[in-house]
Amino acid sequence: MRFGPVPLSEAEGAISAHTVRTPGLVLRKGETIAPEAALRLGAEGMREIVAARLDAGDVGEDEAAAALAGRLTGEGLRVEAPATGRCNLFASVDGLVLVERAVIDAVNSVDEGLTVATLPPFRPVTAGEMVATVKVIPYAVPGALLREACAAAGSAALGVAPYRRRRVGVVSTLLPGLKPATVEKTLRALRGRLDPAGAVIAAEERVAHGAGAVAEGIAAVRKAGIELVVLFGASAIADRRDVIPGGIELAGGTVEHLGMPVDPGNLLLLGSLGDLPVIGAPGCARSPHENGFDWVLRRLLAGLPVTRADIVALGVGGLLLDTVRRPHPRIVR
Image (cartoon, rainbow, N blue to C red):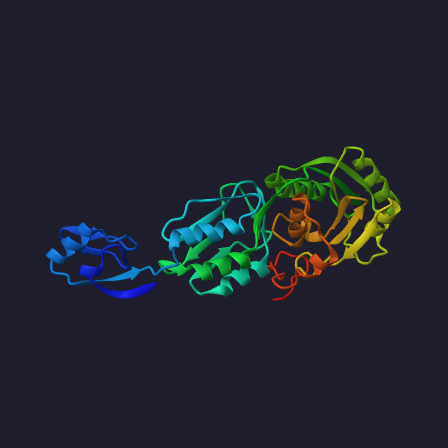
């Protein structure tokens, strides 16, 4: 593509680089210069115009943006028609954003004229929300560069994972110092987290703070056909030999990981009973404010696997906002 001043006598079919306003004409940025427009501008005293002229093999900005967006789009997304070199991708379902970061980085590395911007991975979105945008910077790109970018994009590097798990079972342990109002507040906070996913508390048990009682509570809520178990301990999980992990194991389950590099949320436990995921909630999950519990809960509600590797990868960006209302804020003022 050639870019720069063009004599009006040679401007027909070129693309106006900037908006040009004269008393008798408005030629907008990105508009193809028609013969009558060139004549009118010449009649009003102009001799040249800054324009872009495509070379053989060049692909216009809209066509290029649409082609690249189409290669990136996976399930749960819809693509809007391109305009001004931009093609936007929108969620077609409620769920979590899926991004293959290495692919997006590879596409953005091909050439400065081809760009892709996305929401962060696993960001919750609702249907109709923009998830990504493809923007072609110049008015056209060489076809070879577009083909290279499309090859780097592979297929379906972007998507939205819809929420799949709808029925949650909750077991809360009780100690003399734990007020019933605290348990009710905890359940309200959990319902607020489940609502965006269309999920509900399908079964709820309150049991003594002991491993055997936890196992019995798990068995009771499983009878309701639940798809996820959340355990709220009356006291925080301090060790793999503590009450909550002990109760999971007595119920026939496995403790897969204890602790996470997200604060608030350090004391989260991830476990399973066969294919039924189990979360031992950290104390901060009693609060409606976002914490590490939200990050794990959302993925599980979307039916996404959460492994030890996923947990340990959360450290970068895992330091969330602190508050003086926490029992033990990080910084004592």
